[in-house]
Length: 403
Image (cartoon, rainbow, N blue to C red; front, side, top):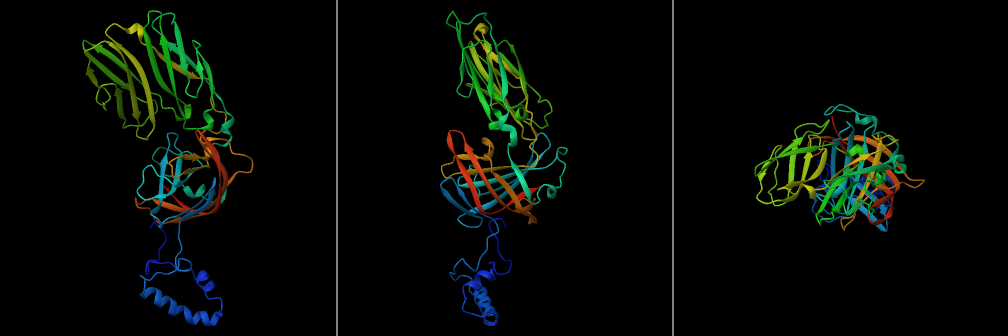
């Protein structure tokens, strides 16, 4: 069904206009006499090799120039499939997704993806009327005006000795600071999903050294969490603290060096040596919101060497942070490099136009879908790579929607 378009009876779909073009010397009356014979031959001899032109018509395809490549993806050919899905984010906004890529792939290569955000918020698990947003019009490409927004982030070290001999911050975007409490600016809006790994390295005058790393995320995508711990003789107990506003059930993953992965909310393990142990907790709630936090834990009287830090985002977004009725376009090339339209600011003249939208058959999961025709001209960005231009020539894809 989503591998390509086929006629239910013959397994092929006839394109009469193309067939007529293959017999230009015939008049309308002569072609009308010949047509039943052609149909009879085709229906009785389906195994015969025939030119694609004139006998088959795909339902989902992309014909585009992406960078220096001429890209032609057709569902039902060369193992390609029209993948469709939808998801609701933590703010209650649905995102409708379609991808033309190899069937059964996970880290799909040579694949093109379209994501369209709904035009409103709804309660978690509630349905929405997708036809209100999936109608012919021009859409804003994510992240809209967000690329002009800068977030200031203040970092504060948590030290157990008054004055370190040396202190170094690695702020995750290539910036190094030796300030005690640095104030740094991040252009999060250039990548809405970006997480920066920030590391603090401390050396004290007695030679004691400590290093601690944690993630810094945009408030919109940052699920707050923490954990507590207590030491009882040679047993270390942990307690995960719930995500504010999170939706159960929660999944837990504790990362402790030298310890098998722990997946419960209150785990424990026994220790037999002194030192400073980095511990990280990853939590995923029922909506798929994922958060990670880490701490240095000192055991055996060496607490003076354990350094940690916290941080505060001092400026929030001034644009529509829900990105309603906006579009993201993504291309993963054959090397596996991902390019996205929302990783940088779109130049003047960029556009995405939805030309048509019509309900289509349910997908393999039984979800409702829409078949979309669109055209786009924009820039795609990738971290560490030169931007590339996307220009569609013809594009028909599908997205799934909740009913």
